[in-house]
Image 1: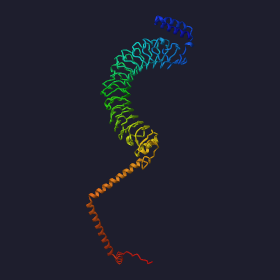
Image 2 (image 1 turned 60 degrees about the vertical axis):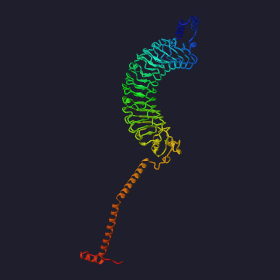
Image 3 (image 1 turned 120 degrees about the vertical axis):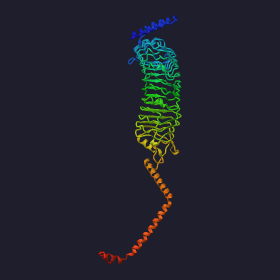
Image 4 (image 1 turned 30 degrees about the vertical axis):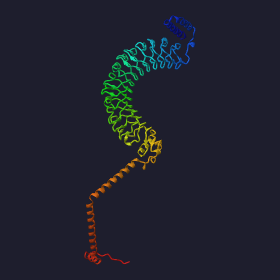
Length: 525
């Protein structure tokens, strides 16, 4: 191993000498002679690095290196040179032909010479993010036949030319985010038959690079947010039939054409947050029948109306966060989304109204996030609370009165989120969990009893009012009926009196004798 190592270093020095000015040849020869007497221990791990010859891992993070070390174990497989001062990738890489992972992120790389990775046939991950690379060509990555991940994020790239990545047949993830890309050739991604994840976010694209998509038939995840789009035309993502995740956050969208998402039959996750949409694009979204997750906060709509998400029958999670204009959620807003499990309505500062029944009919709802809104109270009839496992209500101006007794009972029984009272003044900053029915001003502990009593009182009031109205309307007839009743009663009383006078005791005895009735003897005491 030692002789092989020294042999490789000597070759490198000779190679450098051939490319140096004559004045430097002498010094190179001296270095060549010196290396012949050096041992592996003398050439070992550079200062500030950690080298493990058992796992073949070398870490030189923040080690103030300005060149790639040439004295490492040639059998290393993982090389981390993150956060140093390295300015270029030189021929030293030819020593390390077993490399599988290389991290050169956060250095001072300005360019990468052609064929720098020619001997890295086993390399699978290459991280060149956070450097100063302004250009690359189709020979930059020549030799990387096994590369699956290439990270070029946060550089100064401006243009992607034709066949730029055609030498990377096994590439699965390509990160080009946070560059200055304004132009992409139609065949820039030619040859990337295995590409699954593509980041083009935070660049200078003025439109979706639709013409360059047809060669990406295997793409499953696309990030194109933080660009300068104003609209999505019809068939904006044509050719991406296998796309599962689409992120268009912060793209400046104000208009989405009716058939912008046509062809995305397998899309499962869509992010449209932080754009300029003034209403929910119901018709456009209805074509995404397999959509399971939707993020659409930080837009300019004021209400979520009935059937806004019509057609999204497989939707499981919806996130509406930071919609600064949103004021109300109307009844039936999620009536077509029976598979919803998570609803996030957070940080919507004007949202104060959840209409009665707005969340009714969602049998699978498990998590409801309502934090940082303007809710003062919540109705028990708003949704079915039996299946709910998590409720977040923090940072709302909650008014703690008897209307929230049902929520108090739910918190105590299900251990849901903590709720702090804002009003009335005597309960300000008190936790709802610590209050009682009396604290909330409830006369009865059970709200159902209150409902029954209120119903009875209202019914009695209605009946008494109806009876009073009836008597007032027919008062003349009632008066005459009462007068007749009194007169008849007096007549009956006179007849009874006369009848009683007609029959004396003697007459009674005589009449009973005539009818052969034996008189009852009277015994004097």
